[in-house]
Image (tube, rainbow, N blue to C red; front, top):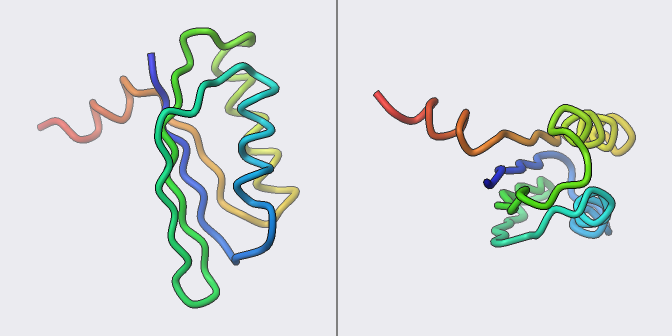
Length: 89
């Protein structure tokens, strides 16, 4: 099972480290990362393997939401099944 994490907001030092720390806390394996800085804006998409997660998905999602509030970023995690359903007609 995989999940997609998206992060968008004003660029600051340590965004990747903070998102990675939450992944470590919940035992999510980072599979792929792409990030860009567009002028002063930061955008990142991260694919994670959540098969060995040590907490339910909603707990993990709440942690990323809390990180977003704490940092002033939009931080969202979406289960692979939902992501695929949204992009299938």
